[in-house]
Image 1: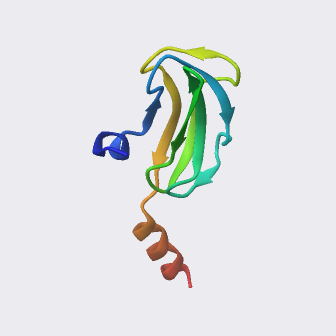
Image 2: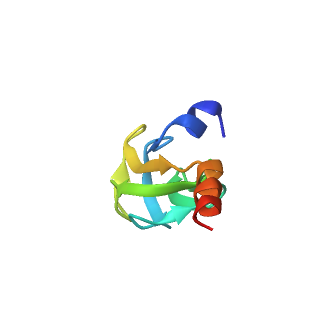
Length: 92
């Protein structure tokens, strides 16, 4: 995954395609590498993965619906693992 995707909380369709599967729900926390959405274009499936630990803020697509290139699919909130570990440590 390129650096732009790693730092952008807005996940967009990589090409005009059809949404095959949505693997997440709003409010869910996912880890780096977890599946977010899969799209199909020209008989090829493209699975979009989380670039880092994050929370799903909103889902803008629906399964079996067509999307245009660069159309917004999912909005993320990146979670800093260091802050989370320190918060847990401070509560103990």
